[in-house]
Image 1 (cartoon, helix red, strand yellow):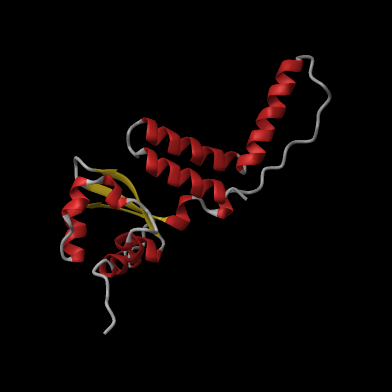
Image 2: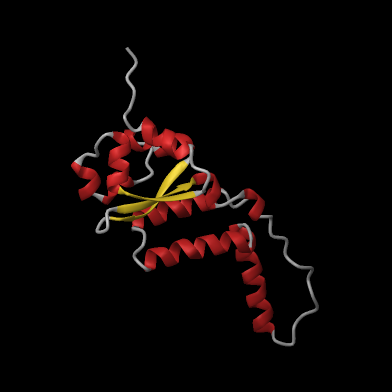
Length: 160
């Protein structure tokens, strides 16, 4: 007998979606999967995008979705397509401009070189924009430190 995870129903539901993000309440998710454990209502970590959690791996992660903006008070979250968080086509490799003649302001020239270096390391302006956005969401309390770390690791891996 093959055991089937009840979270596969959530995976099937997400696969049917045309949009790249879907806001849902915990109750809506509960209805799809046939009931959520109390931990889903009590612990934000239950919603983490973690390979060590069977419900995540058999549910949303198995079809390329991730959780985001988990609001424990409102009991709602947003599912986003992992492939859409940063599309490779939006992150062309950053090519620094041709070297110009030395500036009359040597400090500005050094700063521009440092900015060029940083942009090159993070994969370009769009990539940096996604990184800053993630940090801003963390600072606003929309995501927890663990989610910030996961998102930054994912963005860093996709920078090239």
